[in-house]
Image 1 (cartoon, helix red, strand yellow):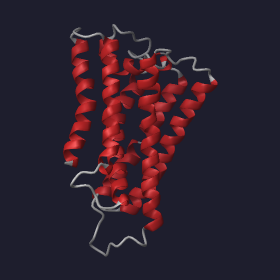
Image 2 (cartoon, one colour; image 1 turned 180 degrees about the horizontal axis):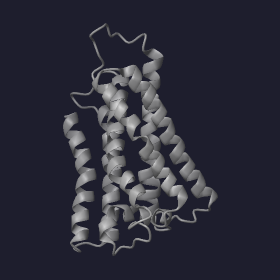
Image 3 (tube, one colour; image 1 turned 45 degrees about the horizontal axis):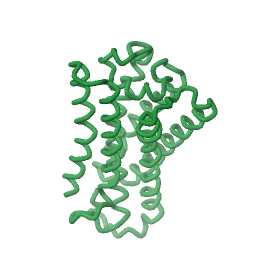
Length: 236
């Protein structure tokens, strides 16, 4: 059941984004409307992904710690994929085709979607480029985390995840703080842009790291009390 929910979460993210991209390239839909649909899909998909381990399904893990670690693993995987396919191209193209892009620049629609909510993304503002660059810099550590999971080295996964989560939390908090101090100079006044993108999408980079810090903090705090003898591992 939980695998089905994860698949549904992936579909909510991927289908509107990639399907919308194809439709926009073909000139069959309005880029702004499809951008809002894709952003809503991202929010719903990421929300379902993080919630899945905690939902009362028949195959839910019996204890809260394992559920938290499952959510932490799902978030690391989701962020790694998003960073490779969105942040990394943005940083690489921010001074190229993304800079000054409009709705007519359909090839960079996936990045224009968020740029209409924060115009700093379409002007290669140093804050925006640096923010996304900091996310890209975490890619090697996220790979280390997933490898540690695969090898059942939970202590290493815990330590590296806490470092990455703290960096993500700090970066998004700084992004919001700078936006506030600048009087939301680059932020759109459109309700959909504010709710779905500036608040909605970004909030997951607060919620996700918070779940990770909570889960791995519990793991490290209670690791001596967790009943796992040599050869036994947590089911994550």
